[in-house]
Length: 370
Image 1 (cartoon, one colour):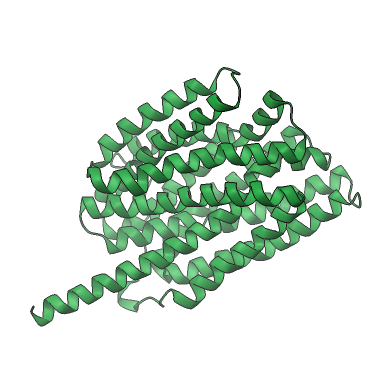
Image 2 (cartoon, rainbow, N blue to C red):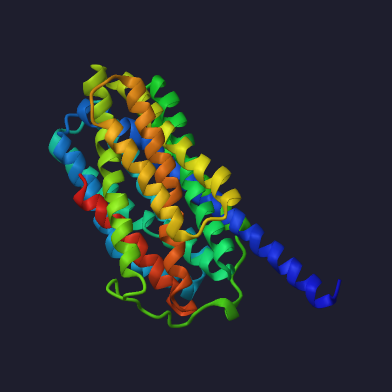
């Protein structure tokens, strides 16, 4: 083996190792977020918040994602993935510590519905939304920077999706198990997991080589014909998924006639099924099939649409779980195609802006869906 080939092999191994660290940090951070999903509906009812107040909080958080994703995407190219991720995860950890404290006061009856609603909006909506907006654009910009061909990039973007899918599974399990010990226990677990992700990023992610940074990342318009079709398709997929994420907790509680703790546990099982579907498609199937972005999107949307149709009738728990599995499987195919496709069409200096646009598009759906 030549010296040049050996050097290139070591560089590739180092890059792959850094991608692994980044994806692990993303998975841990999103596990914390997903831990809240099964309990947010019964928790809100327990402390006296109405469904529309929870929906508005989620919409405000999504608005922050829309506003901050393009900023974070460009900063990831200018400052490096490590710097952006550490800043975002540090802020998110502090915010969720404060949020857990507020929820504890609400459960103890020491805060009324109005101050609780304001705290939900400010902490879980504005602050946490601005922080978590950095995670996906940073990961996607990093993958785009270290991959060069279509197959490798699709696998890389599938890795980002797999990190989310794993987070869906782990979050559902953690949320469903911990809620048995009380609604407050998962709340405490969230900032702990964010702190773990922060520690991993701080300790293992390398400081970027100055030569790899882009001093002035290029902007990119959503109307650019290279990316607009992908953004429209992604908007439709995430809007539909946003409906399911918001209503599943309420759907389980109302269809199965459960009290708050049991509803949180069964909603966790439902989200677990969606996470399993995503993980199967992104970890098991995509690396073996070798499909391009367009085929992944077409097949994925077909599966997801079938799942949404199955979800419509009130036919008991098992059909609901099958529906969630199909939705997760379909979106697990479609999302890597949606995220990888446009990265093959734009210039290197536009990758950060593109990652921000994708994050903003996804966030926009969670403003509308609630």
